[in-house]
Amino acid sequence: MSGAPVADAIIADVRNRVEKLAAEGRSVGLATVLVGDDPASAGYVAKKHQACEAVGITSVDVRISAEASQSELLAAVRQLNSDPGVDGYLIQHPVPPGFDFNEAVAAIDPRKDADGLHPTNLGLLALGDTEAPRPCTPLGITAMLSHYDVPVAGRNVVIVGRGPTLGRPLSMLLSLKEPGANAAVTTVHTGVPDWAEYTRRADIVVGAAGVPSMITPGVIRPGACVIGGGMSWEGRRVLSDVEESCAEVAGWITPRLGGVGVTTVAMLLRNTVAAAERRAR
Image (cartoon, rainbow, N blue to C red; front, side):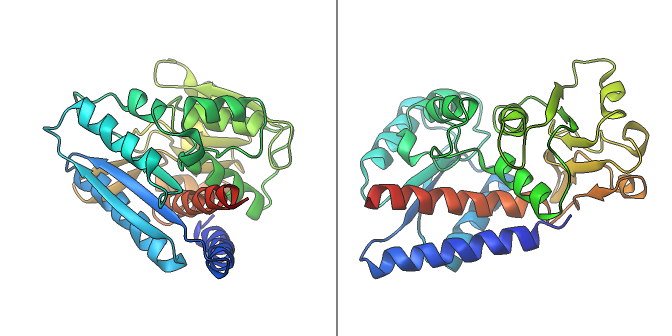
């Protein structure tokens, strides 16, 4: 289940929408806020700016020192809220110790929440609202399931991980009564001693814990769809929650590279152009 064809289709649509807005004299702007100098986070931010350039979205790169204060981070959020050239923005997760990510996200103007993580937008997701921005990684996963014709409605989905950026919102998204969802969703985590008993019965397993290779061939049902959503780093090497040997058992599986990550970036661009279109109404 390569993410490339899914991301390419989304990006082509975004490029067309950006061009249409440009023809009307309207630009589209995305900002990122990077706190500290974590190499992995810096790499993710760089890819997002490259993607913006490829589709004609103006990007703004805000950097805040790890030695700065929470008040400085909140000041940057307020400035982006009031910047008419920024349609959407995100705070790169995680932030260094001493910073409160949740407080900063809650201070974002919900209309400019490119990541779909503001409490208002997560609440609208729970209600099934389709206008508010939705979290990018969960959106990318649902797009991949649809592209590869993986049956979801009525199926048993187990998500291993309950984080606010992936596991928790994905569980809401896949349980909604709408196309590409309507599943029976169970969320487990590393604090559940027998979590593998759940995954062995699942039609779809999503690794979302950020624990390298925790999903092994022995914990999935033959023929199941296996998605590596959680990522971690070992030096410069990206590690997936899903062991690559699961491909010998799974019916569908995402690759370690070129899977969920590229669809996440594509959805970020889609959320941003949608925010620009709402502003232009």
